[in-house]
Image 1 (cartoon, one colour):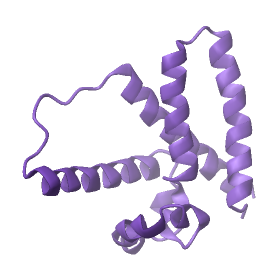
Image 2: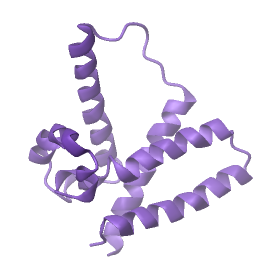
Image 3: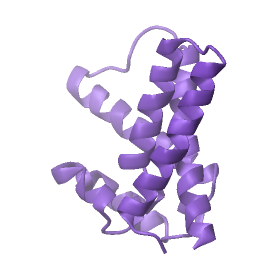
Image 4: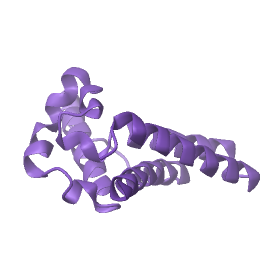
Length: 141
């Protein structure tokens, strides 16, 4: 199984090709930035390996304690390594934690409508692409 750095190098090489293609197709630079940030977070912070003592979990520092329930709920290389489902679960998991922290800090939930702009969708797509590349590389080796 490839190590953390092999996953990062593989992901970023593929992403450079994706970004070059996007620029060639005249994608909006702000949209490419949203996709890139999502891809970076998906590659370095919300990887399928958050259910082990990996380099990715260590990047969270003291906040890695937030992922203990995730580690208990998901066995390594099971559902966390599903191409789409794994990323969606991690996005929902971290969103619930952020919403809980917001509630604790402000004693209410965010007011106003929930919106989904193209930038948020591209950000989430970036996370899913990074997850998919990780899982594909694990499948190759």
